[in-house]
Image 1 (cartoon, rainbow, N blue to C red):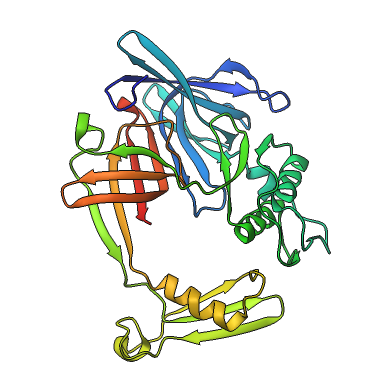
Image 2: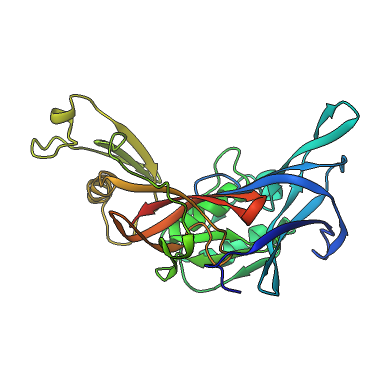
Length: 329
């Protein structure tokens, strides 16, 4: 199917067997949306309106797309439903249900006291083992990221918060798919799609901005038991403390690369954080080949470049309209 061209969209929701991850029976849904955000705790969620209360179940949502006699069924989301809100309008009832990502069981389970991810170990194997202990099906690439230092569980550490710390330390991505399987992969530098005015893939209204206002000029970095603070006091820097007349702090806990001092890291990292970030917000047709963390090429009046997708909101409705935020690379 050519996702750049128009297609009709309908949606199918199925209850899922959490032991086999196979579909069981259809659940009627009226509408809703699916949110994906690379910066959120659970990475994705869904809000749906149902015709009946179903309690706590695993739910899978499909897009059924049709184009010139060709049809495709694409899994969009698999997650855990919560207690519904009942809506009564005369003789009609509906139920609004919030659905949690497949990562929810990892967020609810605490690590044992004293647990740590060991120096020199393969971070992808650690993340996979944490997820598998919570019943999550994992697809991952091995041998891509080895830890440069121990990562020790803090008070209140969950399986998910530790998995995300390890992923950050090796600069890999945790990525659920529509079937509820989780992949652990490096961030890709391959452009997955080109969006422009051709075939009206992107809607006419595009918001183009640069986020310099919140750029920090002071960075405090902590690694294990050491802390370094670097302040931008360069009179030639437009974001410096003297030129802005105020201090804007940011703090990070990091695992240092081998051979890099904490002070040098703080200085270089602050320069990275001060780069004004170009942000695009737009709506387009849904393309199953593009997810959060992917690179896309965008061509529009005054815009021609490569951007990394940070968030998506997929509407369960006409044409599967997708609201997307992408950041300049």
